[in-house]
Length: 151
Ligand code: RB5
Image 1: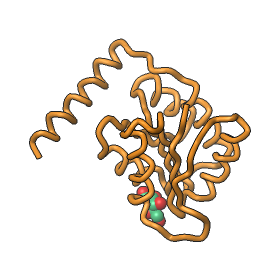
Image 2: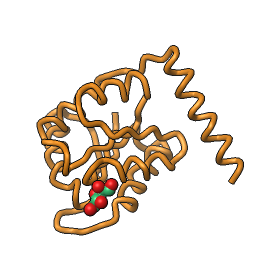
Image 3: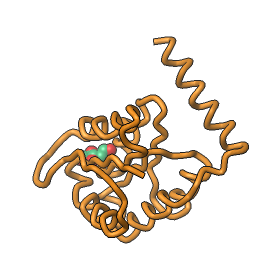
């Protein structure tokens, strides 16, 4: 599992805590910024990381902003990306088992680092259940294809 990571300034501190966890858990990742002390636009950094998932260079992405919302909005513009803001163990679990999330979005202004790390652990461990959930996810991906052709 290779993770592409990005944050804006509002997600930076939480990102640092989660990256320390990923290092101890020996999960491979590359951090595409931002660095400390910068004020940046989350769209630029989120797009940079998610592009690498779309290209196949990375398996999944974890993004951090103030709420987890802006980053998810950006990521969900990319084909094949299912970005899910998660805020507790339940949403982390179903984001994988039901939604087949390949991009986790976390809010530095709304989550403690302990909770964020628990969410990440679950999100990395849980598998997609398939079945009726696969039918639903496939409908979303078909919609994406259809809507892109209309542009
Ligand atoms: C930055 O101040 C903040 O707006 C951003 O991190 C994020 O919360 C947007 O959704």
